[in-house]
Image: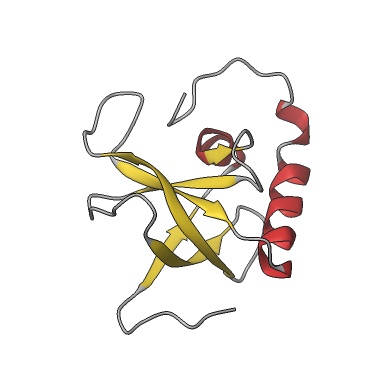
Length: 115
């Protein structure tokens, strides 16, 4: 796992399963997580994220690339960007944990932060 540049760690705390459902992008290769932020990121930018999930006391490290950007805040879609998970074991661990947490929401038609 590559170390972030100074000041380059993005903190992302997802407080509950409803927010996680809205933030997870399962249709992106390896999965992706939408991060609400007013800080602009560029498509393709490498980022290091400390991810906090609803049932964990510690944050998990995630290296990834920005694959989705929303610069405008709206009622259903807050400003932010999505980070595609890499192919390392840390990303696989996060993806697996997210899928476990979201297993009860399979087939839901609720809107998300991206689609």
